Image (cartoon, rainbow, N blue to C red):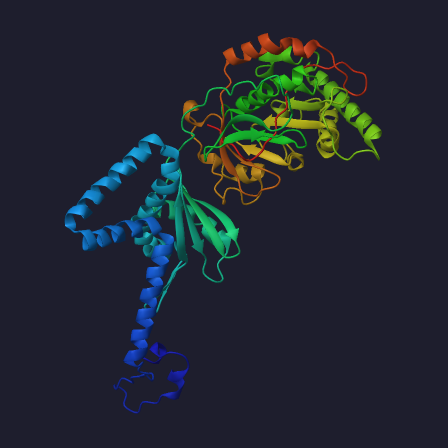
Length: 501
């Protein structure tokens, strides 16, 4: 009986009658009716102001029709009510993008807010453990606003005091199923504020054709467009000034990223601003277009070790010449940007039976990844198994791409701790080629949040056309900065601002 009393009051109560229940009644302070009415009126006015500010279009339409009804009569109101949808339909047909931006997505956001998120907010929060129901009162995170675009809803949330981002990331699946979305991604807007992204459809479900080769008039080594981001923007991969690691299971689409980068850098290769040095221990991917690389192609492990050590010599020679003069590299025909592409790097490191060769290759890769960016030498490496014992220098790659992986733990191995909690579900990518090949999550050095992308598919016919049009670029022979001949090449990097399909 006494355990049900609040606080320490049970200790101060004494009952001399064994079967008599002791009733504890706290003091009740009655609020004057005037104060209650003022509070209700204030809440009503605040709610109306908030409604007008958040949903100006949804409020203006019925209010305007009501004013017309009162001033001009029912007939005029019905005429205007029929004219407004007709005008909206004409606007939609003639200027669809502006209509969606100014009206369509706002109306959809209001609809989703009222009939999806606000309707289910309380049960989803309580059942998922993000809200609390204590003594008849709900303590819930505050649903602030909803915005929509062509592919997803973005819900702005104010967390409860004391909550952490991990509390929400751990319950991403609860939130996705609770609001009827295929997935949920959690991002930090600012202290105490989160943005939950709920995709409504998958814009990367259909493969993309190869991106057209850039024009030869203005060749550059900047970010190369190779596909599309989930939000519809082009996927531009930056390779100059960084190193890129691509990890994915067999058939995940690593070749799309390699060939997409090479394809985008072909004009710069012809102009002598870029060289691609290709290491192809599998002999199945890069060999298909080896005429683009000329003498800078190696498949035998010993030749791969020699080519990597030659890249180290070029890097060190440039460092000696640049010392005290410049801190960053600008591609020129005398000092072109060198992109070393290694397909299936594990064949040269963990799976190489020759210990001496393995040590030479590992040492060269470590040297290039730690010192090569500033002098214009970049590494793009692809592998299937991202474990530390297979690739012990993976943390030396600033930019990483995780394609389809076999285990959930591998996602954080590639993209860093917490990447999967932020929505990088690389282990859930479809193994069906036309749906999942080339789809992945990219994490940049400058941003902790992974971006879902898809690289365009470069077919065999596309590669043959590249070789036919640009194969001679690999045999022109330009200066590498130490007197050695060069071959054509391609560079790849990443810049957040595009999406792969």
